[in-house]
Image (tube, rainbow, N blue to C red; front, side):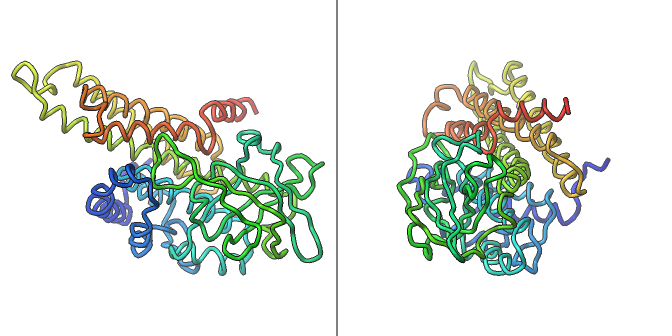
Length: 380
């Protein structure tokens, strides 16, 4: 087993890290304060090929392996959790839906602009009464001639208010349970009946708009159906499984940011005429933080390796996301503790890392659901 990065992976890491340090980190506090979508940063990342990292060049992507994509997203999230979510929702969810389940025409028409960063993508699955319980969704898509008519609403949709392409899940057969769900490509600017009801005021993850969407007799052509009718539930599960690797990457990026800041602060902050890093209690905190980050990275890359090899990775992705998301909150919490009273103020970034880290335990599979998934895989 080789734990070293290839020359290309090191190059990707260094390139993204430089961009993050020069462009994202100096803007992170401002993004958190204003909660405005940073379109200019997205355009710059598109120029660097960061909006379609894991997809083939024939569709405008960068053609990177999933290790490289995870490394890139980890670095982006180290700069800003909100920007990390923008890229993850755009790529891992909307982009992967089109790449895995779209036909050739759909990939050329909708995936290519996403990968090139000309369009932003969103993934509309959750509803007020259907979060973890996906089959409880109320949104419907009725076939009328050569069109589908969508009615219903979605909640908690990352990028939902700024996306040009949204992959939407709806019931085409309300009586068939999870086998009656289908997935579609929706174009907000083209499809009458698409409405953004508003965006959420959140604890963290600022800069990435989380929208409530409504569809009122929204007509879309039949060629917007992804794959076959009734396969939407399978599409969602497979897409979320891959997305969990990248939420692990977001988690690790935030944890690394908290660790880096805590290490620097501990070496500079003096009490009792010596740096607090001289005290064993602080050293133990730093050691535990670093160990947790290292372990999370191994779980993330193990899941990515199985995905690349075409092996089953449901349990591995769930474990990576579960562990990384929980340690990101723990490491951020310890970062605040090492900063003491200063860590509780907005003068330092560690409080933002904590707020951003909490989301990792909720979206794309709560920690509770992931434990169920892991146990089910063990008992199968």
